[in-house]
Image 1 (cartoon, rainbow, N blue to C red):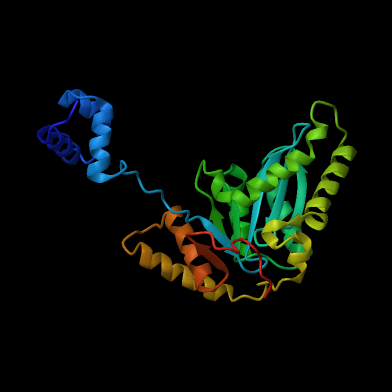
Image 2 (spheres, rainbow, N blue to C red):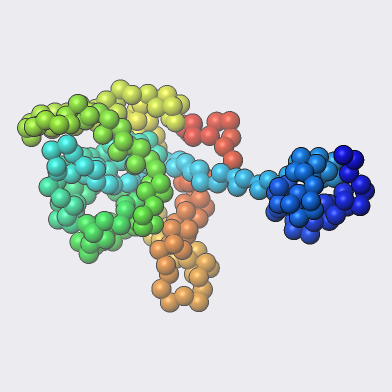
Length: 284
């Protein structure tokens, strides 16, 4: 059946009035013609149905120096205890790992003090989740003592700590063979040490240009002698610019300010679209 120009105009008018939110069957029902006829009319009038534009990927980051940011987290072990580990965000190198009966502030501070004491240096920023041990007064006092900037991720947002979460998964995969059976402390310690050795010193990392994590960490320039007072002052000024009327700056603004000051000091890179060499570490 031939569709009259008047009917065609009614279809086009209805589609434009409701900004292409009506599908062809809805329009066909109102006009009283077949939906295939409506689809043909609309294709001729405006082409394919408009689609919502996809948001660009804007969450990619790269730390440019070792010891800029360390990240700590707990993960479950097969026999019921916890593994507390800290990694360097630039190289993915596991700097320290300890087993703990539970997440508690005392063991966390002992872990952090031993790590800083052994390496003889501390990071500029320490990233962690919202567990009670990390939010404890004891751990926060440790960070303040060493002039380390705290960086708590948003609540219930593990994807913000993606490097650590992927690292947790790799460790869980290594320990799969221990599931479902009784494991002695000695066997667990041996498996953990072998797994960490493999991830640090044996496995080539695509994100590091197929270098090994320990190799990158040891051969990269660090920031141990960075001007922490200057960094803290810059951070304070940036937070004041972001929230000039707020008596107490929120953690969301704090995180934005930390990223901004690290970019200003050329210690962090962010980009919206993945370049050809995105994520590949270039040693300077």
